[in-house]
Image (cartoon, rainbow, N blue to C red; front, side, top):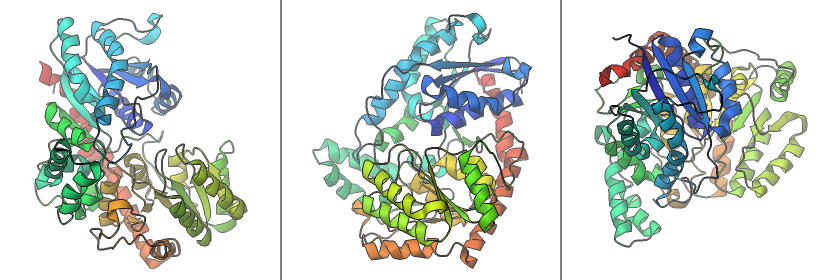
Length: 514
């Protein structure tokens, strides 16, 4: 492979769950490839978080000289929420255009070799970029502008790569890999909407009518299409066919999760680069992580001293997701109390005022057994010897952190790739899912593993009791053992396996431009 100097331009997405792995991916490329320079575009919103993440890479002065970080403004709040509602609105496209509008100026300045800040201390890279790597949500909208910007500068259009900080099975399902029925159902849904059907009517005619169709790609347990998230995903699926680009997914290799090679060559058009996480150390190991300055770790140290290992349940549903209803939140909190264990609970920023009130009431009842906060050093929490289980919405970043620390999970998937992740990790034997919290069209339907979602409170309570009342059972010990086995396989994959080898290849995308 060529060692000619190359310049990559990377556009991260203004959501920390996307921005963080895309930033770490860029830093790892810098460390692996001495011929490579990178301009990294990050929303001004994440300056502090990104600066802290970059510091964890411990770049040498020479490596730092090949990295140019540009914090571009966004100027105003997003014009819409791509997670809002069930219907396939234009929110996905509008949101992507909003990102592109604010990043375009910095992209143009980078291509032209212009200074972006008032001082020339931002580290101008002397050669123009020949490779553009953009988040999957934004790439399809920036591509036409890229061609115009590069043409105006007298340069060939760049090699394009799509960054997917998402589950590989999710991407495969929406790109029609391995006979996935989802694209066909999505197309039928959109046709019904165009013909005048309401959201609910179209959903009934297509998704509900296709409940006997199962998604079976990569490592998924057979998963009914009705379990997939709907919002704006027609647009999401279409964009894979709109832009010709290498698809790079940040997800562990199939073999590292499932322990066996894939039985057949998947038709998924893309590559996996493995988890993009920095711990500040070459490997991650379990153990205490005392930090007098961090109240969460101090709480866990106290729990460990008083109650021993595996005495703390860690709960974090991200910033956007909580149980669908306030009544379900109350049932969930009651189950945590009845477990008899201590609890670290992250509120998130999107919990409603009533849910926040439920949390406060629960916190007062729990007393010294509970620690409630807005943020935790999650990897440190998962490494702590006191951790018993991680209760999560099933986001890709959180679940990969659990995998590399060997922590079993209880998952309540919300949207996007989360149902797919729950399906895969339950099949892999390192997670359980809370099925009875299904709502809306899911009520009265069976999940792929045969659980009938009833919508009845007694069944929700029974499921929660079965999960949280048995965290020391043989069944859960089996999950822990499997989690440790997967931890070792994923770490080996990152250090020398398929994912590491792909990171070596991804430093030479510029060769395609010559």
